[in-house]
Figure 1 (cartoon, one colour):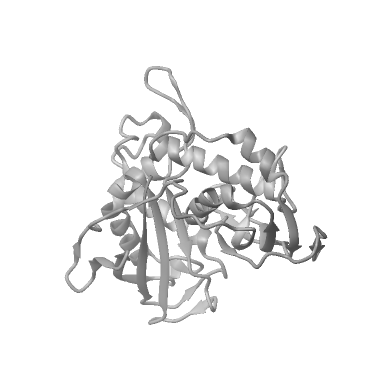
Figure 2: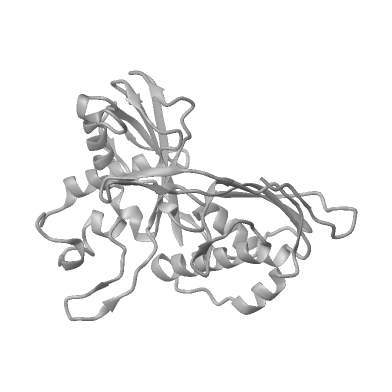
Length: 323
């Protein structure tokens, strides 16, 4: 699957007030700006629009299941977009303060880079966060970079696509052996099983989430659903033990303008150390630390980092910190 991370370097031109984790704020403002600048048939819902598969907003945001023009059922697909905000060091910002965030685009989503840059500039003129109706939260896009290349600069106002898109695969070539790893949850991870959110992170649950994510992304934007031994991987994952867990529940909320209410984005945070026969799982984990896992990935949730850990010298005793 093709993937690229585009980093937006912006600067506020008016005071701003943002939440500590602005993923929801950026997603809401981007969706509004993209529809405002791209939608041709404004009186149509996306599911009834003949242009939905050619529209930047329809392709990036309107990914829900729908009934096609010939009555066929079109299945939902994962968003080809993940927004990665930088957690704000402070929530009250001034004109001149920087605003930085990234967008991950998968597959054909990369074709819509010009639309996204245009939408972000529109966001900047309209403002984001609290008080935008009074002129707060306005910013200017100074630069967009990808893989060391400059795709856009306000100095010349020219947009260039990156020369090469990254290729993400499950190829195990070059994968080192590992007897222990540390999984750090960088943003809240929301996993559901039996319609209930998970409150801990056994290795088998982590692998289930990774398999779902890889299968969905590759089917929608890659070379098709990968040929993996799903049952066998889960069976082996059940044998991996936790040697140390500092996983905790992290509260996080967002305001939904559509539903006019506060919605929880809470999930798991912290670190967990796993030990056992981990080598067969490394390609899957390496892939998924690039694309996020779990629910609400478009907000930047479910980001994790996988690092090798020194193998425990003692037996399989499990040390947990419960919070």
